[in-house]
Amino acid sequence: MNLGFVDIVQKVTEDGTYQLMTFDFYATFVAICGVLLIGAFITDNSKFLNKYYIPVPVTGGLIAALVFFIISVVFDIRLAFEESIKTPFMLMFFTSVGLSADFASLRKGGKLLLTFGIVVCFFLIVQNAIGVSIMSLLGENPLLGLLGGSITLSGGHGTGAAWSDVFKASPYDFTAAKEVAMASATYGLIAGGLIGGPIAQHLIKKYNLKSTEEPYDVDPNENEVFDNVHKQRLITPYSLTRSLGLFALAMFCGTFIAYITKGTAVALPTFVWCLFSGIVIRNALSYFNIHQVFNREVGVVGNVCLSFFLAMAIMTLNLVELTRLALPLLILLVVQTIALILYVRYVTFGVCGKDYNAACLVAGHCGFGMGATPTAIANLQTVTDHFGPSRISFIVVPVMGGFFIDIANAIVIKLYLFLPMFA
Image (tube, rainbow, N blue to C red; front, top):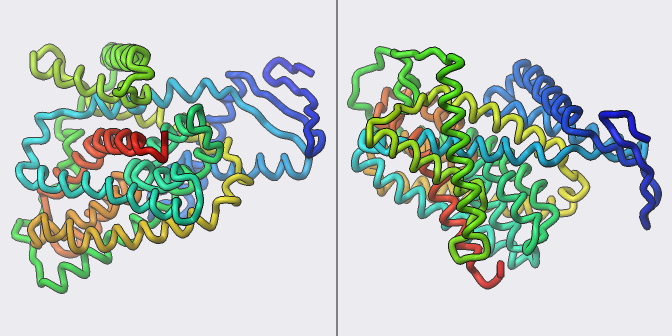
């Protein structure tokens, strides 16, 4: 039966008969918007969700996935949505990360940014080594270790959803990839927010560390490198058209490079090439003084696309598949949390100077090492509110968590996939 926006057919399998409702593009888009509105309402009215910066698409998407699961169990009705809607949103989000990567801003972080970057990159390797090792010992698919490693814990929901699409396809054929990725990323957000502040506080008190800076005259968040709040530009139809043109150019270049490198040693997922294309375009325009990318506008477009992409990815989760992997995944995530605590305590803090700024960087590393950049900034804000300012931390952490870690993560993941166990 075809109702215009939805096609209803009866399916017969070995497990029984069920009704399959397939929604078209427009119905799918309406569903995504509904999921985001519901998620925003619940998040705005929940202290817990606000405290740990759980994204609106995650809240709404998980509720929708649970509702759809109940419908399938009680009424034998399964819902299918227009999956092709995800890809453009995903590519636009990662393109926005690339277009935000201004190499000139790296100089503001100085030597500490380089040192912190090395520490952060090495931990990406550690996270994946732990993940792959534990899953191999438990007799599970080693891809589960990567998804419960740097892909989601350092990469967040967006990176997790993107790589899960890669792992669900040939030659990997890991059907539970998306469910594992979303569960791991959500756990990471909460864990990163829980441990960052207490660890930094412990270090500050144990070593009697003090801030050497004067109190902020303005909100320290205003130091974030991606936005100069003192010179607000208006988002106009003309400026948005130019920004969308940059998106289109980067996505065209990224998809073309992905096509010509497919099957070669340098093959990478399309979203990674779009990210790299955005970086090249943004910095080439700046270097030759051709055009100054409107960071806030690019960020708005990227965040909107990420919201749509995540809402679609999470609301179609297969919760039955996730329950089967619940125990090994839980074991892995607990070990990853312990590993991060030990790493930031003895490596991040030690290598970055064992001073007050290093303790603040520990709080930030916990934030995006297990969750996302907003969690890292929230951890920093909490620490500096209590113990004093650390301006360098509010430069280094957003740069590292905002775009550098995504670039490094893509390279690390690709290198791991060359291992014989993934061949």
